[in-house]
Length: 398
Image (cartoon, rainbow, N blue to C red; front, side, top):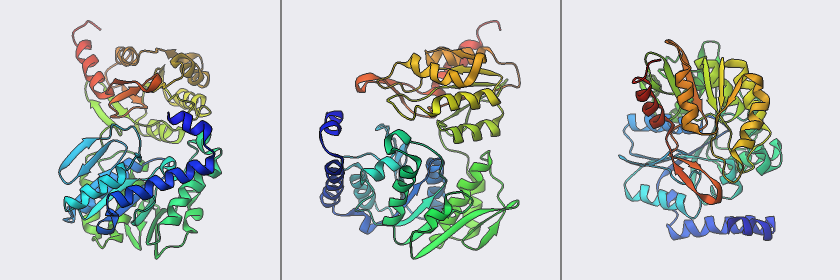
């Protein structure tokens, strides 16, 4: 039905359709954002982690919070998985969520804001307290038509938020976002070995690995400072933070390490590999016609960093999984092994390990399903499969 609507309704009418849905949702749930402070986080990478970090700071400061990310919904102490497989679910879901947060007594809600959601007006009729920009690299090019259109979609969010803009000043697209007017613009950036946000300069000693997480933490600190929370509370919270499910999550510690990560863009994948320096990599690419250009690029990055490369199924949707695997393999060269069955691919990766090796499995993170043709889903969790295959490995002579 959704594809038929897209095929036969002109784009301008489709845009108005989504706008009307957003307006009706606001009416139906009585404009909930008028009674709660909403912070939106947008960018190509780091949105989920930044949402979790901002929530941690707000809660450390004594506020009751709600959040909506690509992995979960949270209202107060209640947490449940985001099974929609959408960063910004439609059909009134966000407005209903905010109403529940208000009714539960939450003072803040922190949301991931995706370009697809912006294009479909899902950010409309939400009074955002602040907009946070993490970074921008090519993504969703087929959907938006070009990188410039993708950037403009993100810009529409900043155009709609009039109060506080929090921007990664080190990103090459920062000036574009700084150009949107707001009551207050807060820049955060790296200064040598230190970081700065809203006039404060500080060091960070995180448990989270990778320089990109230093930027995510600094974005969260900037958000905390924008709400009058002290630098001491913000910094202490960041340095105590343990991690986000499915984001460079260490699943097996000994005798080798196995990490599971969500990375599916070239920029994110390279940063994960640079940080973890894996010997063995398991990766794939999403189907459904999504960003086919990046498939060989992902393979090239794996070939640059990994000794053993296993290319496997990820979320094929309505495409042939073998075709997707071959497109990734073109970039990886002759060293890439192709194993369509994702469980078998993980099993093979574990069998190839030596003590002290690092295995990195990307593309799924903590997602709970694999998306197949005709809207079907298969129950899945990379972390669970890793643990199961690791247990089996212990029972055989290696």
